[in-house]
Image 1 (cartoon, rainbow over the protein chains, first blue to last red):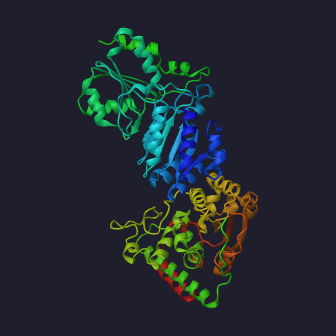
Image 2 (cartoon, each protein chain N blue to C red; image 1 turned 135 degrees about the horizontal axis):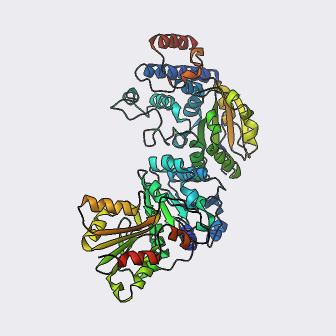
Image 3 (cartoon, rainbow over the protein chains, first blue to last red; image 1 turned 30 degrees about the vertical axis):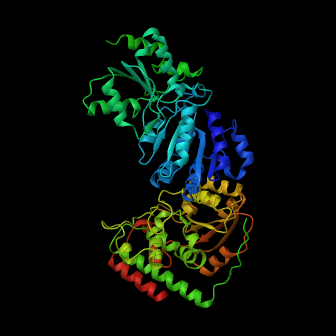
Length: 307
Length: 273
């Protein structure tokens, strides 16, 4: 997804002189290098200085430019939090904050590099929009939306490397603010977002001949949340599974449970979110997710125990 | 970079007289408001009165006024009364400062007439001005930003100072209201190593100059001097509560005078005129 992001910035930046990339010392992967070489005046590396990255983006947006503030998710959101709140959200300026390698993707780099609670934090600020594409295809649609966006900041939460294009077969178009059906079944709905969609497909596959029972939804827009879309899903399916690479606090799972409660919905909801805990495991993301209770095996076992 | 227009460096006698009169009137107006609403920063507004006056009345073009950032947002009452004198805000609007019917608060809100940035939390303005300066690089507009010296204690201000120097944004002018007095105490006591300020800023690729921040002629000359290929910082040496000695104490950072103090202050200001 990181390379796709670079490619999209390069492609769009070529024809649109208003696009600026404000990076905080992140390696110029893929086409970012080309963008920098061809448009040095619109590629600003502020260095390890995330607060000024956001402030500069705010100033550019005040003058009608299209800035993308870009670095690793943990540093793009946590370090300059007050700048995001005051400069971008309070002033309602159209800046895209790109959080790369979000969730547990950077597990082997430790807790300082992970974002277990980024959506929760971003969601709490008025005027903020949040998009988390599942793959490169959704990323392209997301970037197109960000380029058209005229009001308010967007937190664009993206993955890092070579995710498969899981949403390729979807019959529904990507529309900002609308939950999207990726594969269609009739008994169980898995609602997820971001690159962890991969696990949803693996769980589905494990059910072999019963896998046609599964729907998979990409809830790519986390704020504003498609409440009506979710209401319909809660009505339609007997079981709803929520799978996310994010803390259980102020998450998609808590939002969906709120919607179910408000609508007196009786659907059985199972959620797989990150625990409210820091774990110290460094081998890979799979291990980290496993400690949080998320694995294909665990999801599968819990599902077969359903009645 | 666009060539600098030819500009005056000297304020004539008449200008000086008018400048003094305006500054006195702004201070009187702020004191008037302080008798209706106690929520205002009197000391820090009085310390930068000459700075904002010269910018709004003698330096900035119409467009540059739309790019101006008051990073020390707590002096917004001063910006409001200046905007009132220039008819950007009406008397009615300023009279309703911090009132139910009004929309002007203690700190500036972007979107209000004449206000370009919502500041109030310190250490934000210079970075936003950096973005504006980048966007305006191909124009002849200068970007003015007024900071408090307390903002030099914010790491984010230094992030901006470093970036502005590296980007060689010579269209940016930062004026630091160096009144040396914060909510709690004097800066040369709490942070003695902050001085000399000029040298620190210069070391990041800026031109940095000091002047008497209550001397409009000096401010005018420094701001209008020939542009170098560097951003410009002006360390304006000021006195909190100037010219009234009674407001020099740190308690006047955020306090309004009682009626007796108010009358005394008005009298002193009128004598100054």
